[in-house]
Image (cartoon, rainbow, N blue to C red; front, side):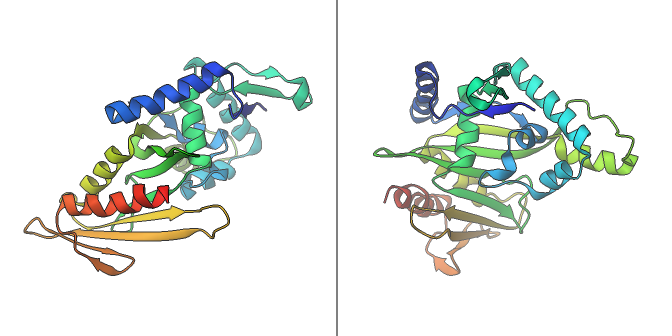
Length: 269
C-alpha cells in the first residue's frame, strides 16, 4: 500500500509553486485546481480530514478489503499519470514502506481540507449535495490568504469499477455511483469567495432556504458554528438571519457585507 507524503517540509520548488497559486488567486480572484474523484479522496485519507461526505465514505469502507486496495492502487496510478503525485518509492526512513511525493496543486487541496482556518458548508433546504463547501487557508502573520472551493458535481467519472463477486449488481452500482462522484476545486481570493457565497445565497433558482454553516476551531478553543440563513422573496429581496437573529441584509450586497465580516474579518482576529 502506498502512503502519500504531504510536502509539509517540501523542496523549495514546491514551496514556490504553492506560493504561485496563492498569489494568482489574490491577483486574478481565482486559480484553477485539479478535479478529483471520490475514490481519490478516499485513497488519500479524506475521511480523516475536516469534512467528508458520509455516503462516499460508507461506500468505501463497505467494500471488500482486496477490492478497496485495488481501487486505491488504480487511484494512485491515475494521480501519477496526471502528474499530481510522483511514482512511489521505498523510503528507508519509513521502514522501507513505499511513499510518494504529492505535487503542489494536490497538496494545496489536501492541506486546506486537513487544516482549514474555517469550513463553510452550504445547504439548500437542508440538502448539502451539490452545494458549495469552502475551506479557509490562513498563514501566521498574514491572515486569510485564500479559500478553497469544493463542489460535488452530478457528473460521474471513474477508474473502471468492476463488479466484485461478493457484491450484488445493485449494491455495486450504488457504490460505484458514490465512489465515482466528481469533485471540482477552485482556489479563490477571500473577496471573491465572499462574492461567490453571497451570489449562491441570494440566487432565486432553485428556490428554497439557503443555509451557510461556518465552522471555526481556533487554538485552545472549542469548535464553534455560526449559521447564516437566507431566503429570497418573490420581489427579489432577501430575508436573512445569523444564528436565528434577523439581519438587516436584504440585498446580495448586504449579504456580502455580512459574510465579509464573518468569513474574512473574524478570521483575522
